[in-house]
Length: 100
Image 1: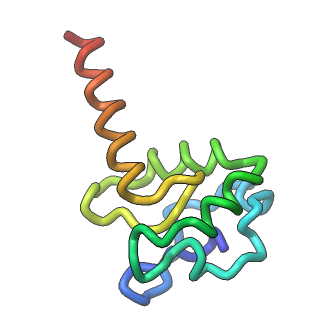
Image 2: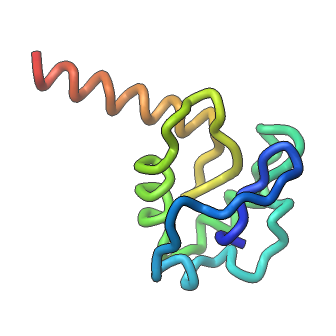
């Protein structure tokens, strides 16, 4: 599953392939679970992620590789695009506060 990112029905290759990706609980699951047509239909994906040993690595990877907040898509590390956007904003605010 993690070798494909679906955006507008087009399969894209991730920016880089990481060794831990083969250990994901999602590896043999249908990609449609993680890339639904409606953003907030993520319950099944989140259940899979909740059992995954590499969930935090997955979340860290997508947070580091997702550059455009308006183009976030799919469930990674147990978080949907809206949740990742909120997390990214929180991190940004904390960094700004620390740099005062």
